[in-house]
Image 1 (spheres, rainbow, N blue to C red):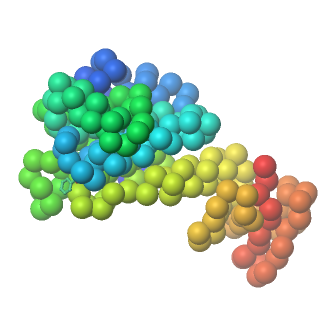
Image 2: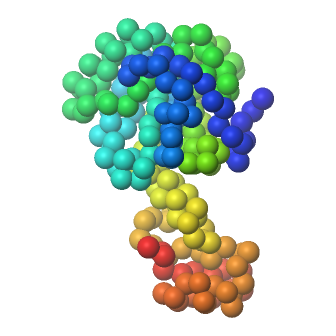
Length: 210
Ligand code: BEZ
């Protein structure tokens, strides 16, 4: 069955480049990213994993644990990590699942038969500390994902989780945010001491709360 926003992220046990994991235990109280790539020793995937490794400190700053997956075996993953580190000038220190039996890929609907009968597409799930699915995106094999955008979305999700705000189109960390419709203007004025800019009764901005 398809996974939808708000669903609990299905748990699983898997072999990874850093040993066996239980997904929910691996996440603990952190946010999580589970992302698939089609195959080892392929060019776009090499850049994506390298980029993720180079942004590892940014993920840690946001309390996000990263977990990659493809349907290739562990020994292949391990050889390929050497290539990624060499060519992308990084150090991959997040685990990569070896999902040869496609168990996790099937659980997360990462194989789209009309794109490829056997390989995973580029799916990415963001999971909250409550283990609920907060976001998913799916890209075709030929398009590498934008990991700065992934960080931007995490910033937005984390802000929304703490305050009654949403983020407008193209929002970036530090810019004004939107008061959610569920909060009355009267309450918003009390709740957001930095001020509320009422453009329309339904369109109210406030400076980013933190
Ligand atoms: C890649 O990662 O470069 C790739 C993988 C499968 C199809 C196309 C590109």
